[in-house]
Image 1 (cartoon, helix red, strand yellow):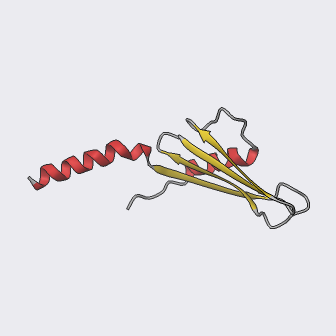
Image 2: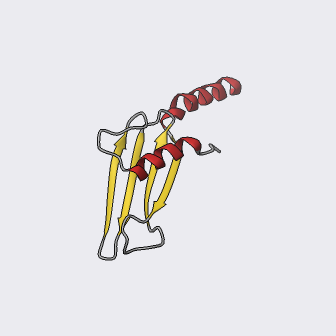
Image 3: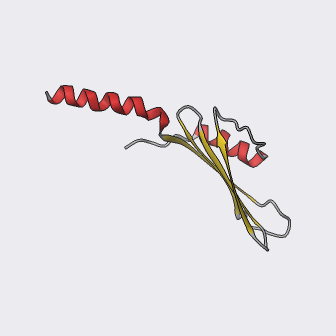
Length: 99
């Protein structure tokens, strides 16, 4: 009975694993000449299918802006910046370990 229960749990995990965040990519940069320290960033959070979100935060001396774009199969219907593309590419090379 325990073996059957464990097998059912493992099968459930394998079914849901592709939909969990498994790939994370972070790119820091300075988009404006008047700020330093690479305080802006783009971060991609993708599942095993390459679906998820890319979030970009832009910092200037006057304000901060935050943008989010949906990602489907490692691309978006919205135009992606070079930094957002790099974050997506880097996310594929980094896989979050499941404990």
